[in-house]
Image (cartoon, rainbow, N blue to C red; front, side):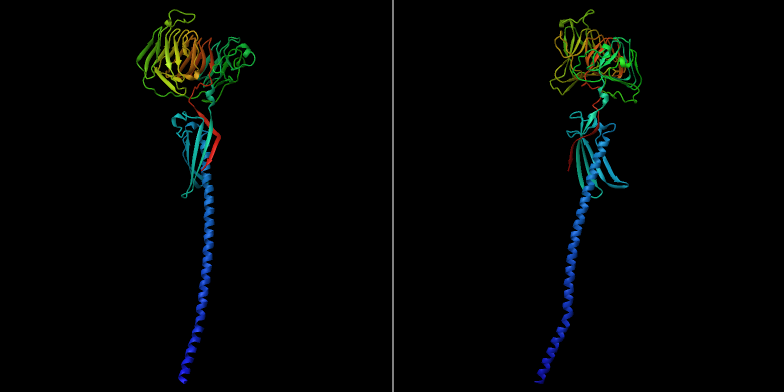
Length: 471
């Protein structure tokens, strides 16, 4: 019995010792659980903080990349105010804040049809508009923003001249021009101070107009315009002073190169050698595929005071513009001489460009009562074509590259940047003229067609916002 009691006491004592030894283990377990809870809370809080921080960074980057793309747009608009704006195609622009680069704007400037401005300066579709596409990126990967805008420009004011000369413009007595004139050199208007003086007239003169010198014109088409005389050099008025000869304003001493537009004709190759003669009583339709040599329309016999209505006594050359009103048909010749009462007729609905490739002599000559640019097939009722539909471009460097002498009816836009333009007792019913030198002899009348173009389609000041898109 005694042994049994001893064994039971030992067992009880062991259990008590075991119970006393388990207390530290439970406490450690509690601490571990508590630390795990703290860690979970901390991890959760850090995840929330990290998420908020990432969202804040993304939001900041979104603002930055938008600002970069927008800066690219503003940069492009600024470039579209400078020289050569009509051919600007864009570039890659680094955007900085002081010395720190924030990002890069890749700028593309397109025509509205998606083509690049390039050499044609968007002539094919809406040349006054440009689409700017600015893609902004940051120095870190991924953030990207695209801003697209459409801006509208305006044409250069140099395109509004009826007559413009690089070296000088001289108007003899009894010369009347309805439209503005300009010169990169000087302008001289001859006298005397009577109704025979040279005059620059508005389209719709107030009252009698310059003391009766400017009558009521019959421009084609009818447009309102003011007749200023603008020159880089001096403007000399010998018919009683410029207020007596210029209905608009006389503006001499302008900045060099600021008046007449610069036009450089491209190389069209060598002039043709195959001549073309149009006899009296015949009508010849020119072939646009030919590069003609000298083209001559024969004279009507004698010295007629009026042209005969009999077709057998007159020569006619036809330049067919085709049926597409938006198309231009080109003809090339070395020279063109239109004899007495002979006619150059423009048929069709489109436009005609006549290139005269004579390098150094007289390229275009018309003589007594000849007709250049009629759209009528009825000889007794000549009707001029609209000046903007018939353009003559002359390569010659001669002082008389174009010589109109006592011609009866002339219509067209004449571009003679390397040679002289002489007009004596001839009537240009409507059109425009750009030449190295222009000399209007006495008894000449000229009316501007405001749709005629004496320079390239040059647009600038692309700053009128027409559309904005943020992608």
